Image (cartoon, rainbow, N blue to C red; front, side):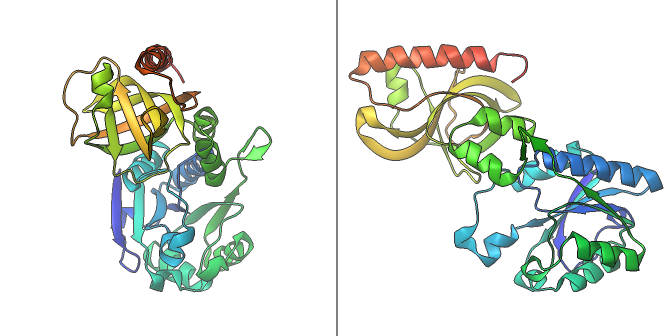
Length: 312
């Protein structure tokens, strides 16, 4: 298994050619994408070719309409590893350019799918769009595949609680702080990466040192206090995360602060990945230091219990 990043008009590595291909942004790699990958695996196995997930970096909207681009749900690295974990033999990341995004649908099909990938089968969802302005749809793709002798499998959407699983639905859940719903849609807890920066060390003075996350590339859940699991240098730690301003100390800046329960040591400059398990409460001001400390103790005990559950 491998992840390849190439120019859109370059010839892919030989082990990515003559296989079954699924094309998409795969943001979040949620349950709907898992259904696509399962079918992709079946198609590849049927004729003994590779299962290839073809995606793009940056996201096309980030190039064409950067002011309208939604925050990502996964880093490029996480997305690739998740796709491999769902059954892809290889992940092929095309460097998106305005030239590529300007191709008509038929030209994209001819240049990328036929000429460079020499695909033998395609697997897509019902709302798949391709080519300039997403002019190509599944109906057009079916005609192109038929003419080219390429098999096409269209996978219906995954429905959860009567609504289609989608990246936009996951963003709504996360923005409102509903990380339990987001996890149900993703098939795993939502993960936020960041690097630990310097803070005011207020948590340390209160007896609960926190890591202040910075340089986050994906969506930050809505304000609140959360139970999390934190990955650091191969070890998972239970943790309590606070997202938002600190009204007790009249701070209006929105921050992400995480207390790693039981951890001893200096995290400054280190990379952390936090899996969000459950929202515990709103952020709110406290009348004094003693009331704040009592609430923090309660938050940490709740977070410890939730993070130590075998499945969340």
